Length: 337
Image 1 (cartoon, rainbow, N blue to C red):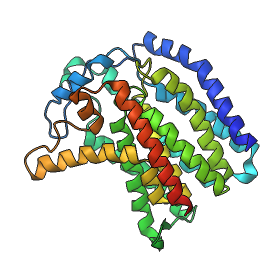
Image 2 (cartoon, rainbow, N blue to C red):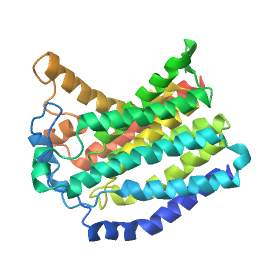
Image 3 (cartoon, one colour):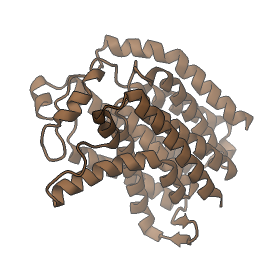
Image 4 (cartoon, helix red, strand yellow):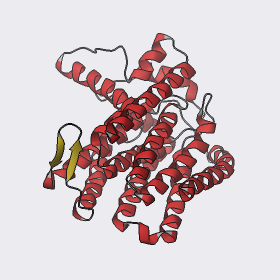
């Protein structure tokens, strides 16, 4: 356990030292949140979303890049130190999804920041279809490695027992990864919301991985926790830095992969309950608009609904953290009964 906590402290210390110069660097290259003209999935202007997000303009974007660099380097160092305890395919899946989705997010962030004014008025960032296809390809590769090299071909559901999925485990893993990537991305809309909830989820998974005696997974989670905690200090209201898509996509992918490696999908869905609720509110909005011809909520995702109702941003975030803590407790209970 001392190694696990040691890596968490080291990651926290390194990220804390680097983050202020990194914020200054983002200001220097003008990697800042721009005034948006966002389109929803129906190719319509998302005016309410842009109005509620107007106060974020000018905040540096791309904090996830620093987290990716710190976590990847420390994870590779840990692999070198404890090679005998590490499954090489596990290291590959963790870092491949982390860096792969981060690269996709970074490209999207660059497109948002530096594309021509005319293009930004047409669409803000990558088109959803292109982004979704690339996400599926990365997740499909990760799921295939877990199946062919890790031997993962089953899921365990409490009270129902173990289900062998065989080759169907690959599309199942792909779905889980892509779902959590987009759930995290949707949740990342208020100062400190997604990163705070994420830290609580990681704490629960650290307990589970330690109980499973998966030392390297526990070390990876601890490294991730330390870096995210340092970032969160500067991300709470009013935020000095944002994750950007480079952070939200990579962190969401890591959460899904960590959950899959524990072999407890029901606990994963419960521990990440806040992310599930956020993406579900958006999905309900899309389906109701498409099939019923009207929106069930004035605006989605859910945190924007509360913001529109007049709740203060810190109030929404703190209650999101509390809800995440409750979900984590229930998820841990479900994981160990």
